[in-house]
Image 1 (tube, helix red, strand yellow):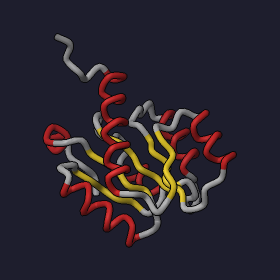
Image 2 (cartoon, helix red, strand yellow):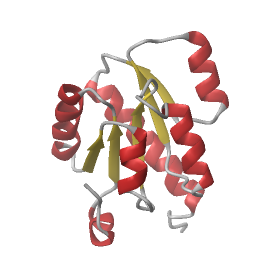
Image 3 (cartoon, rainbow, N blue to C red):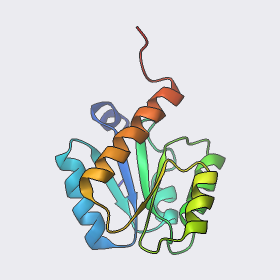
Image 4 (cartoon, rainbow, N blue to C red):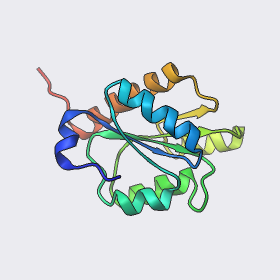
Length: 141
């Protein structure tokens, strides 16, 4: 479900990339109720194909262990596309070495499932604020 340019102006877009349909349905509802626009994909390839130029202001929340390209592979492909959207990794199978590797590769955050909804929203807000600053989208006095 690609997001149009006009929708970018209304609210940040949060992309969910996770094969767990129940989780993504719950999170889509949460995000939309919180005022975000959201789109979901079951794997990195579908996301990359549909969102060849993701919006400038948003965030990606992706499962670490995706079928095909994993969460860190997705991050690498986004960098190749010069896409600087923050990436929050979710995992149902936490592993210290994966967490360290993810953070060394500059993911925005690393959260363990089951994720607490208000914690996810808090982390998304932090990622969006940092993203705005990095991309120069904030106005200075």
